[in-house]
Image (cartoon, rainbow, N blue to C red; front, side):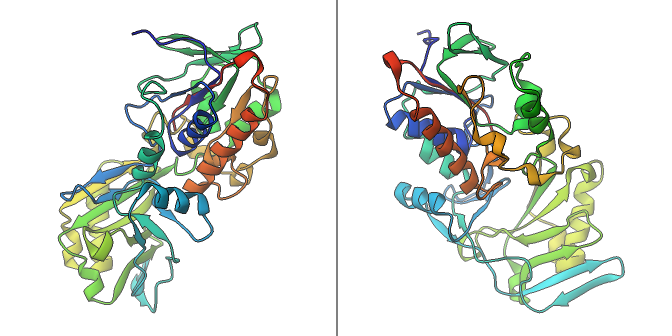
Length: 366
């Protein structure tokens, strides 16, 4: 059955921000479509499965903290199991001259994680949408005024029209992937092209083990390194240490031939011989994700642009709205920031009278 081509709102991106916007608009009775380029929801909410179907290891966004009430409320309402990040134990410092053990956990702060992985948040939001609202494998290729007071949204399957469009993708990615012609103001174009993508230039490495052996040695699984390839390491184990895992961040530019061996050698130096042979080593290089990072991602470094005032104001006659975590004025880069940005964009749409039952479309990927 063919889809209709006209809607109130089109949301671009089905990550946390896009899904938050789409669910708010749907709940308010607006005809909303959420377009996602990937074959899954979640965007940077991504996990690797484990032998236990109720446990997963996050390869993207992981934590939420005190004061992040949107995430906490959503998890509680959806019945999502959360647990406290492991904190107990000492920290290892790695320098060119060797390693040192430092008293206490000097990296982690009290936080919570999702037992089944952060994508459970995206799944909870998506479950609130009717089946025809969310369209996967549908990248947006162009957005421009259609000459009739609406916005035309190009996709490989044809052109859709909407009263409003919400861009729930990183601004720099939107400018590289979506053709706007000369419709956007020059200052906004410059800002969007310069705004970093949170985690975009990072590789996240997760090493899974049979047991959290480092805890038996009084270690927190926390480490700083001045030599790399992993620069910061933490305990990624699930509730009660199962599944057992360590994870670390590395600059995406260091990923290449020999990277896996360098990682396991580093883990062995930090945590002992048992760390040299993980059961599974997951390497998620976000810089190579075409629906997360633009080609310029490794050169974007001015994080002061997050939450910029230009992202708070709709453009294209008030019809185009920004809603990724990079545009949030609070908790930018966090899941909480993504939810806040999506809610803010939805409120801006709902503040405009629904004249003659006009339609809203939210365009989506994240």
